[in-house]
Length: 221
Image (cartoon, rainbow, N blue to C red; front, side, top):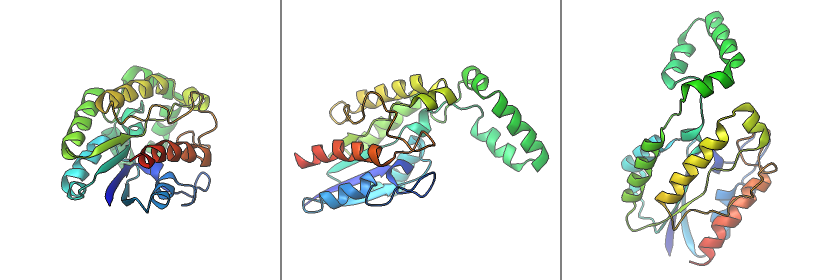
């Protein structure tokens, strides 16, 4: 029986907030139940994971899984345009509460300007591409399927004006890195109805879209 390794960030997990998505709705669990007669599943979901963390975890742990199929859902943490760097955030969290709150309010007021002017991403495009190549090398005999980064909703674009271009850029890198495994038709062109209220995590409909796209490929072997 073939073995499937699923590697996702929090998008592959059930959740309670901002609205409940249970295990019967979550695409990773549905997939493993649906195809249990044909595949053995190993599901790994790490909240907040970017591709730097992914390839490090694969090096240390998950490369030990001899997978025939590897399904990957990552990228939004890498590409999301941000107002402050990780080091700045860490420093902010260590500051006295009153100072931290003042800076937080200032960042919130100037969020769109900071995003546009600073160009901060946790993983820059060149490193993202290199990480994907490294991931491919880590599983040389496996078929790799890639769930695209979902197209942002209008509300998400309003909150972060750079997100639409960032998602498009990083999806292009995903598609070029895995041309035979990128699930191009995974999401509808207009993705207004596939997210929870945080505009990031998938609702039941969004999980259904991913489940159907991946399931169709597994059903054909």
